Structures are given as C-alpha cells and as structure tokens.
Length: 212
Image (cartoon, rainbow, N blue to C red; front, side, top):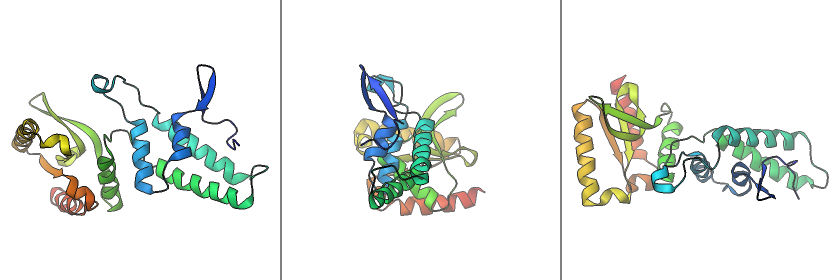
C-alpha cells in the first residue's frame, strides 16, 4: 500500500511509476556508504559520449526534498492501517535515508570515489570539490576526482581502467604536468579502498596542515 500520498510518483506511457528519487527511498541499502553511493550515481551528470545521455536520473534537490518531505509526513502522523511497529520501522528507515541524502553529491563517478569523500568528511577534513578541472597555461590537463583548489591538492582514484600501458603513460604525464605547476597529487587505488582509505586520509591531513 502506498503510504506516501502519491509523492515521488511519475508517469511513463500513461502508466504510474516511481521516480528515481522514490526508487532510492524504496530500495536503497540500509548501509550508510551504500545508500550514499547509490544516491551519488542517481544524481551524477553522465557523459553523453560514453553513456548516450546527458541528464542525470534524478536532480539532487529532488532527492533531498522528497526524502525530507516524506520523513516529516510519516513522523508527524501514523497512516491509517499501518501498525505501530511497522510505522516505527518506516520512520527509522526514512530518518536514516534523510541523513544519507544530506551527504549525496553530484560528481562521484564510482562507489570508491564516494567512499573516499565520506572517509575524508568522517575524519573531519574539509569537504573536497568534485570533478575539478585543472588547467596549466590555459590548457586543460586533467579533471581531478576530488580537489582542494585553494591548496592545489588533487586526489585521484585510479581503478582497473588505469592499469593499461596506455593509461599508465597518460597518468604519468598528468602527474608530471601537475607537479610542474606545483600541484600536490595523491593517488588512491583498490587496496586503499579496501582499507577505507585510512592511509590516504592520513596523508591528506598532513598535507592540509602543511599547506595551511
């Protein structure tokens, strides 16, 4: 039974269906990083050249607003026909997802990038800028996955696509150009992800103190 009063319901071909924001509320995992990463993927701006679309599945304000509205509506009044325990469980889920929605951002291209950002925030570091374009002498050199532009710190998560010989040459050239322009580059890989980026966060903390 629909307890949302029709909020987050769209239409495709005359058939009522859940919007992307509502689908996130309906099926997002009850694990913080998984829920946030799912939200990040819904709101990210796709690259039309590779994905055949340029619009996100969901706008970030829509996700945040729907979550906040449903959380408030359900917590204010128990819907008729909904048992007390079920109502409490629904409220707990919505409150959890409302907190997660506040951490969803546009710009993460993968779950590891989301996990790195959240690890940084949880460690008390300033929130980084995502997908930051870096120019050297007016020429675009790269787009940093995460960055502190004012400190000239660029962070990259390099997964398996970066392990080909061509990618390694390209990444080496990128690092050299950034270093010549006095950027500090930090590279995270799969082993860092598996350790919740503890080493990278420690290095970042030290670098931010040094650059302050």
